[in-house]
Length: 204
Image (cartoon, rainbow, N blue to C red; front, side, top):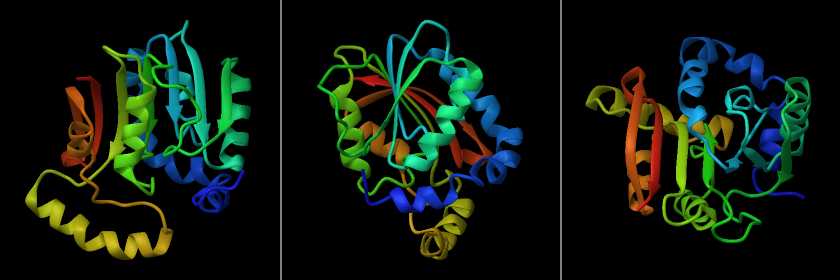
Protein backbone atom coordinates (compact mmCIF):
# COMPACT_ATOMS: atom_id res chain seq x y z
CA UNK A 1 0.00 0.00 0.00
CA UNK A 2 1.32 3.45 -0.93
CA UNK A 3 -0.07 6.62 0.61
CA UNK A 4 0.98 10.27 0.24
CA UNK A 5 3.08 10.14 3.40
CA UNK A 6 4.54 6.64 3.09
CA UNK A 7 7.89 7.48 1.50
CA UNK A 8 8.51 10.38 3.89
CA UNK A 9 8.16 8.22 6.97
CA UNK A 10 9.85 5.20 5.44
CA UNK A 11 13.00 7.32 5.08
CA UNK A 12 13.11 8.24 8.76
CA UNK A 13 11.99 4.93 10.30
CA UNK A 14 15.48 3.63 11.11
CA UNK A 15 16.91 6.78 12.79
CA UNK A 16 13.64 8.02 14.28
CA UNK A 17 14.03 6.66 17.81
CA UNK A 18 17.61 7.93 18.09
CA UNK A 19 16.54 11.39 16.96
CA UNK A 20 13.65 11.50 19.43
CA UNK A 21 15.60 10.15 22.41
CA UNK A 22 16.37 13.56 23.99
CA UNK A 23 12.71 14.64 23.88
CA UNK A 24 11.63 11.26 25.22
CA UNK A 25 13.92 11.68 28.22
CA UNK A 26 12.89 15.28 28.86
CA UNK A 27 9.09 15.13 28.44
CA UNK A 28 7.54 12.55 26.21
CA UNK A 29 8.14 9.35 28.16
CA UNK A 30 6.57 10.82 31.28
CA UNK A 31 3.64 12.18 29.28
CA UNK A 32 3.03 8.80 27.68
CA UNK A 33 3.17 7.11 31.08
CA UNK A 34 0.49 9.46 32.42
CA UNK A 35 -1.83 9.41 29.40
CA UNK A 36 -1.92 5.89 28.03
CA UNK A 37 -3.07 3.98 31.13
CA UNK A 38 -6.43 5.69 30.49
CA UNK A 39 -6.98 3.53 27.40
CA UNK A 40 -9.82 1.03 27.78
CA UNK A 41 -11.46 -1.77 25.82
CA UNK A 42 -10.93 -1.87 22.07
CA UNK A 43 -8.13 0.61 21.36
CA UNK A 44 -7.03 2.04 18.03
CA UNK A 45 -3.70 3.84 17.79
CA UNK A 46 -3.57 6.05 14.71
CA UNK A 47 0.01 6.56 13.55
CA UNK A 48 1.80 4.03 15.72
CA UNK A 49 5.16 4.90 14.15
CA UNK A 50 7.96 2.91 15.75
CA UNK A 51 5.73 1.89 18.66
CA UNK A 52 6.89 4.35 21.31
CA UNK A 53 3.50 4.15 23.04
CA UNK A 54 3.44 0.35 23.27
CA UNK A 55 5.17 -0.05 26.67
CA UNK A 56 2.65 2.22 28.38
CA UNK A 57 -0.70 0.62 27.55
CA UNK A 58 -2.52 -1.15 30.38
CA UNK A 59 -3.08 -4.89 30.40
CA UNK A 60 -6.38 -6.21 29.15
CA UNK A 61 -6.97 -3.90 26.20
CA UNK A 62 -7.45 -5.14 22.63
CA UNK A 63 -5.03 -3.06 20.60
CA UNK A 64 -5.09 -2.29 16.89
CA UNK A 65 -2.50 0.11 15.49
CA UNK A 66 -2.13 1.64 12.05
CA UNK A 67 0.51 3.61 10.22
CA UNK A 68 1.02 4.75 6.64
CA UNK A 69 4.65 3.63 6.61
CA UNK A 70 5.52 -0.04 6.16
CA UNK A 71 9.02 0.62 7.51
CA UNK A 72 7.66 2.26 10.66
CA UNK A 73 5.30 -0.69 11.15
CA UNK A 74 8.22 -3.10 10.86
CA UNK A 75 10.01 -1.32 13.72
CA UNK A 76 6.79 -1.29 15.76
CA UNK A 77 6.33 -5.02 15.18
CA UNK A 78 9.79 -5.74 16.54
CA UNK A 79 9.12 -3.59 19.59
CA UNK A 80 5.78 -5.30 20.21
CA UNK A 81 7.44 -8.71 20.00
CA UNK A 82 10.17 -7.69 22.45
CA UNK A 83 7.51 -6.44 24.88
CA UNK A 84 5.27 -9.47 24.45
CA UNK A 85 2.50 -7.04 23.42
CA UNK A 86 -0.37 -8.51 21.41
CA UNK A 87 -1.24 -5.91 18.77
CA UNK A 88 -2.80 -6.02 15.32
CA UNK A 89 -0.67 -3.82 13.03
CA UNK A 90 -2.11 -2.53 9.76
CA UNK A 91 -0.91 -0.18 7.05
CA UNK A 92 -3.64 2.42 6.61
CA UNK A 93 -4.37 6.12 6.19
CA UNK A 94 -5.56 8.22 9.15
CA UNK A 95 -7.96 10.03 6.84
CA UNK A 96 -9.57 6.80 5.58
CA UNK A 97 -9.73 4.42 8.51
CA UNK A 98 -10.66 0.91 7.34
CA UNK A 99 -13.04 0.18 10.22
CA UNK A 100 -16.80 0.36 10.73
CA UNK A 101 -18.33 3.15 12.79
CA UNK A 102 -18.37 2.72 16.56
CA UNK A 103 -15.74 -0.04 16.52
CA UNK A 104 -13.43 1.30 19.25
CA UNK A 105 -13.70 2.44 22.85
CA UNK A 106 -10.48 4.49 22.71
CA UNK A 107 -8.52 6.17 19.93
CA UNK A 108 -4.92 7.24 20.57
CA UNK A 109 -2.44 9.40 18.68
CA UNK A 110 1.14 10.31 19.50
CA UNK A 111 2.84 13.09 17.52
CA UNK A 112 0.69 12.35 14.48
CA UNK A 113 -1.77 15.18 13.89
CA UNK A 114 1.02 17.60 13.00
CA UNK A 115 1.59 15.66 9.79
CA UNK A 116 -1.76 14.41 8.51
CA UNK A 117 -2.70 16.08 5.24
CA UNK A 118 -6.23 17.01 6.37
CA UNK A 119 -6.53 17.46 10.13
CA UNK A 120 -10.30 18.00 10.06
CA UNK A 121 -10.88 14.82 8.08
CA UNK A 122 -8.57 12.73 10.28
CA UNK A 123 -10.39 13.85 13.43
CA UNK A 124 -13.75 13.14 11.80
CA UNK A 125 -12.59 9.61 11.02
CA UNK A 126 -11.46 9.09 14.61
CA UNK A 127 -14.82 10.31 15.85
CA UNK A 128 -16.62 8.01 13.41
CA UNK A 129 -14.90 4.85 14.63
CA UNK A 130 -15.42 5.61 18.34
CA UNK A 131 -18.42 4.14 20.12
CA UNK A 132 -21.17 6.45 21.28
CA UNK A 133 -21.71 7.66 23.89
CA UNK A 134 -18.46 8.01 25.75
CA UNK A 135 -15.82 7.02 23.22
CA UNK A 136 -12.49 8.40 24.43
CA UNK A 137 -9.77 10.22 22.50
CA UNK A 138 -6.24 10.33 23.97
CA UNK A 139 -3.76 12.60 22.22
CA UNK A 140 -0.09 13.41 22.80
CA UNK A 141 0.74 16.11 20.27
CA UNK A 142 2.85 19.18 19.65
CA UNK A 143 1.09 22.34 18.47
CA UNK A 144 1.17 26.11 18.40
CA UNK A 145 2.17 27.31 21.89
CA UNK A 146 -0.03 29.48 24.06
CA UNK A 147 2.23 32.45 24.75
CA UNK A 148 2.24 35.19 22.14
CA UNK A 149 6.04 35.34 21.96
CA UNK A 150 6.56 31.62 21.43
CA UNK A 151 3.59 31.38 19.07
CA UNK A 152 5.07 34.07 16.83
CA UNK A 153 8.46 32.36 16.91
CA UNK A 154 6.93 29.01 15.96
CA UNK A 155 4.96 30.68 13.16
CA UNK A 156 8.20 32.15 11.85
CA UNK A 157 10.04 28.82 11.94
CA UNK A 158 7.18 26.74 10.58
CA UNK A 159 7.58 27.55 6.88
CA UNK A 160 11.29 26.61 6.55
CA UNK A 161 10.74 23.62 8.85
CA UNK A 162 7.89 22.33 6.67
CA UNK A 163 9.88 22.99 3.50
CA UNK A 164 12.72 20.89 4.91
CA UNK A 165 10.74 17.91 6.22
CA UNK A 166 7.72 18.04 3.91
CA UNK A 167 5.17 16.85 6.46
CA UNK A 168 5.29 18.30 9.96
CA UNK A 169 3.46 21.52 10.86
CA UNK A 170 4.81 23.18 14.00
CA UNK A 171 1.94 25.62 14.45
CA UNK A 172 -1.27 23.67 14.05
CA UNK A 173 -4.06 24.63 16.46
CA UNK A 174 -4.73 21.00 17.29
CA UNK A 175 -6.54 21.51 20.59
CA UNK A 176 -8.98 23.90 18.95
CA UNK A 177 -9.49 21.48 16.06
CA UNK A 178 -10.34 18.66 18.49
CA UNK A 179 -13.08 20.77 20.08
CA UNK A 180 -14.40 21.83 16.69
CA UNK A 181 -14.57 18.18 15.61
CA UNK A 182 -17.23 17.50 18.24
CA UNK A 183 -15.15 16.23 21.14
CA UNK A 184 -15.58 17.43 24.71
CA UNK A 185 -12.12 18.12 26.07
CA UNK A 186 -11.83 16.86 29.63
CA UNK A 187 -8.18 17.42 30.49
CA UNK A 188 -5.13 19.10 28.99
CA UNK A 189 -1.61 18.66 30.36
CA UNK A 190 0.80 21.16 28.75
CA UNK A 191 4.58 21.06 28.67
CA UNK A 192 7.11 23.60 27.37
CA UNK A 193 4.61 26.44 27.27
CA UNK A 194 1.96 24.31 25.62
CA UNK A 195 4.07 23.24 22.66
CA UNK A 196 3.53 19.67 23.83
CA UNK A 197 0.12 18.73 25.23
CA UNK A 198 -1.60 15.54 26.26
CA UNK A 199 -5.35 15.82 25.74
CA UNK A 200 -8.13 13.62 27.04
CA UNK A 201 -11.49 14.07 25.28
CA UNK A 202 -14.76 12.26 24.72
CA UNK A 203 -17.48 12.32 22.10
CA UNK A 204 -19.85 15.07 23.16
